[in-house]
Image (tube, rainbow, N blue to C red):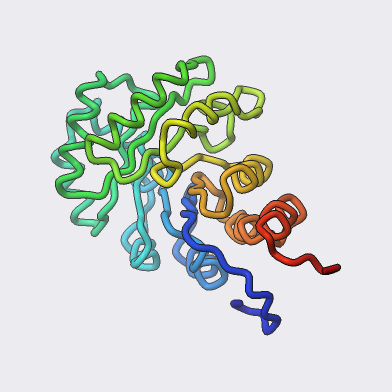
Length: 255
């Protein structure tokens, strides 16, 4: 185990951790990667932060080797401005291989969104996102399931379930409570490996790990929560110790 000579034989397979970056600098990322890099699978440069980051190239040099994606809100801006071809060129110039396609703020006709996913999937690995950023907009569970399936079929590698960075929309209610009924409907219809559940709060992270197990893909994780999340996945925190270790047949200290 990294940084520890005590071998508890704690391992897990799979489970992507998708980190939301709201403007960290290169040196902050150097520190984070040194301590938590092996637990970070995807880095999302939130909404349009990449566009206003003056040292973006230096930052991306530090993140080289990680899957880096620019937030879907910026994709929506590019769509509205009619700059999709220029966006592709910019991503390629930056050396980015992943792209997020979303319609959480701007309404994109359904067929058009699927066309865009298929188009970008020819040159990039696509993460699409389902759900609205408007907490007052509530879609029926069957719509979520149908849209997720369509976007996977169109070429999305993973489909992200919207929650915003605060957990107040999409699969969450405005007060922060999770829409567990909606999640159950999606769970019964979609392979959870195809999804990235946005879970920006510790409470929601613990719930997903207890419900799906350590291999669940979780997104919009704050940088400072990467290591705490990994302890949740491994059962090294009280929130998930019983479910992950004892519940999976691991011996307890008293056995």
